[in-house]
Image 1 (cartoon, rainbow over the protein chains, first blue to last red):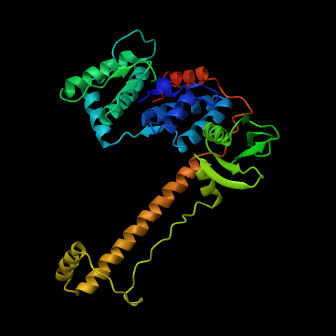
Image 2: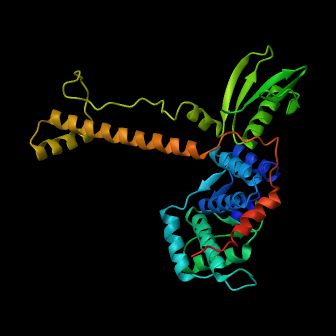
Image 3: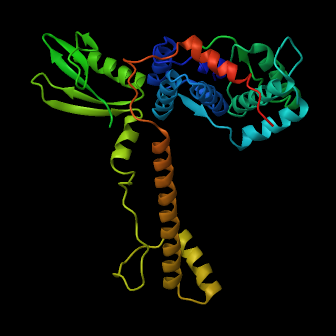
Length: 159
Length: 182
């Protein structure tokens, strides 16, 4: 399952879309977590509100892509929410690192990452992300919480 | 309205053309190749109606790809084409049906509970079932209408500016930097 760092590169002109369409044609559509859809829609909307009309078009295109079922959106369902709640309990704050953002901002991002990791974990999937460090931390926390569960693997490549 | 793509013969080859466009989006040696290219272009555009012409120019097939299905729903005013079943009424036409064992058991239980005949109990169960079915249909229709209202019309990916993949990825990353006013 792609996290937001890969999914946010989807673009009508980008090569990554060819891969996504191929995967859908083979019956193995690329999966993204519902919270990633939230992040992408939010990011585009902020740009639109900031006056960049190109993002209205991109947002419309992305919406139609979702409506075309080319991507498989994995929901934050009851199982994932339960896992996310427990994960947040044991790891309420993001790992300390060289992050220039404020505590509030890092916290908000961390909650989304927790949700994405939990969606993948509960759905029996692994995560492909450019943010491996944070997801490895979450994978380790999941291993400690559920030692008998198959481990959430974290990959740095989209395929 | 959904934008249409045509797969049509062009000389000895097969072309993929957008509705109203003089130039072909792509040209292929076989019709099968052109159909596949049309399908991919439709998906890239977020959905379209693909019309496949035979060699004599007549439309021999049409495929609705992706979100174009929602465009059709919008055109129909969001009405569901599925028939809605009516709850049976005791003064309606007579019917003879075999009652499955599970239903018979439930009907008997209800009949005992309310002190009514098995037939009356069956009618009550069927009426309740029809009400639930209609409710499900109502919710499903509303769900489809709401989604159709969220999904915008066709996006022209051939004209106008799009942010690059790098820009759009950065836009999403930057949104994590936005402080929420408390």
